[in-house]
Image (cartoon, rainbow, N blue to C red; front, side):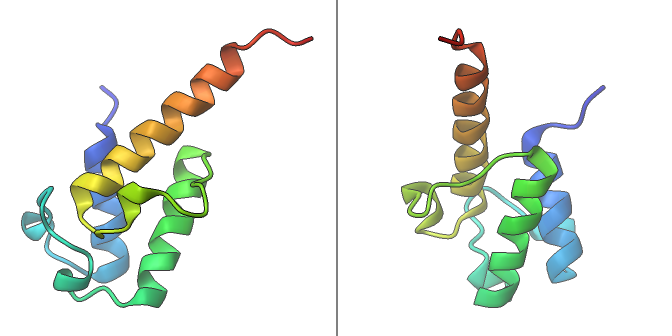
Length: 90
């Protein structure tokens, strides 16, 4: 069984921030979990690499810093990637 997107993201965040996974809820904000801005950028890079996606420069889902919005941003990026791959080549 493949781990859910949410559980994969939580694993990446927990590893980077040395955070107890029990504290990782959809409403939890990275800043409130003690993740500084540099760590947050590293987390985003690792998530992009892990899922083979690229976040837009300004993704509104990333603005509030909550894990739930981060999961939504990854789901959106994966959906866009799948839609792009499904487009016929001209």
